[in-house]
Every structure is written in structure tokens, then in C-alpha cells.
Amino acid sequence: MAANLINNPLKPSQLYMLQLMSKIEDEDLMEIKKMVRTYLAQKLTRQADTVWEKNGWTHEQESEILNTHLRAPYQKY
Image (cartoon, rainbow, N blue to C red; front, side, top):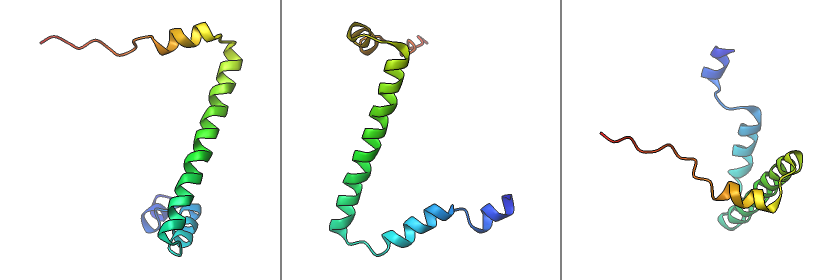
């Protein structure tokens, strides 16, 4: 399998997309990018909604989560 990756590091789906995109005009590319962004945003929203419902979160908990400082403190040297 490792030898196969060296000879062809791209997956069949990646090769397909490269072949397809080689025939796309610039204005079409802009529209495709917009569609992909919209699709990924909707997918992320669905995943977040699933987690929200699974945990039974309220709007108060959302506000608490959004305002929680989770970064590690800086180390003083």
C-alpha cells in the first residue's frame, strides 16, 4: 500500500476533481467555491445542532460557553 501511495499519492476522488476542475472557467470556479462553502457551513451547523440537542444545552449555557476563557495562561520567563 505504501508503494501505491508513492506512485499515486492522490485518491481516485481527488483525481476526478482535478480532471473536472481543469475544464472550469474562472467565473464558474467562483460559483463552485461559494457552493462548497455553503455546503460545509450547513454541514457544520447540523453537527453543532446535534451536539446541542444531545447535551440539552440552553441559551444561558451557550452564552457561558462563548464567554469562557479556555486558553492556557502565558508562561512567565
